[in-house]
Amino acid sequence: MILALGVFLGSLQYPYHFQKHFFFFTFYTGYPIWGAVFFCSSGTLSVVAGIKPTRTWIQNSFGMNIASATIALVGTAFLSLNIAVNIQSLRSCHSSSESPDLCNYMGSISNGMVSLLLILTLLELCVTISTIAMWCNANCCNSREEISSPPNSV
Image (cartoon, rainbow, N blue to C red; front, side, top):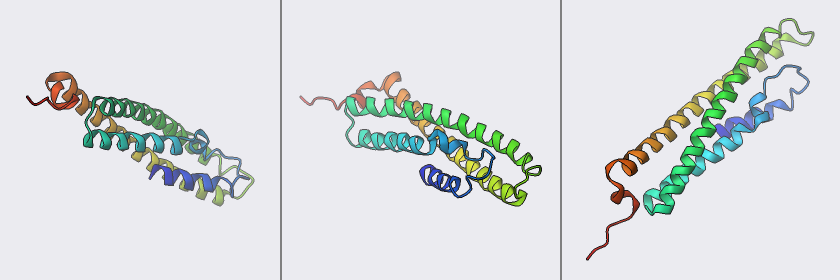
C-alpha cells in the first residue's frame, strides 16, 4: 500500500508541477519506494525463517527487521515533515496569484495521502517492533535451543 500510494503521489507531481507549493516532499525522498522494499524484504525473510528456522535465516530476518524499523522511523519523520510543510503551503494558497481552488484541492489530496502513508508507516513500525521483541524474547531469555536449531536425536 505504501508503494502504491507513493507511485500515485509521484504521478500527481508532474501534471501539477506548475504549482509553486511544496506538496510532494515525501516522493522526492524516495521513502514510498525504499520503505516498501525494506518492509517486504523483512516480511519475506521472517516467513522463510519461520519455515526453515536455521541460525542464518533467523539472524538475517532479525537484522532486516531492525533495518525495517529504522526505515519506518525515518519515514515517520519525513511524512511528519511533509504534513507540516503542507499546512504552511495551504496557508499560502489564498495569497497566490494562481488559482487558489486548484491549490487547495492539491493540498487536500496531498495531506490526505501523506496522512494515510503516515498511518501505514506507523503500523509497519508496530509490526517490525513486535517481531523484534518476539525474536529477542525467544532467543535471548530462555529458549535459545528451540529457536536456533532442532536438537540432535541419539
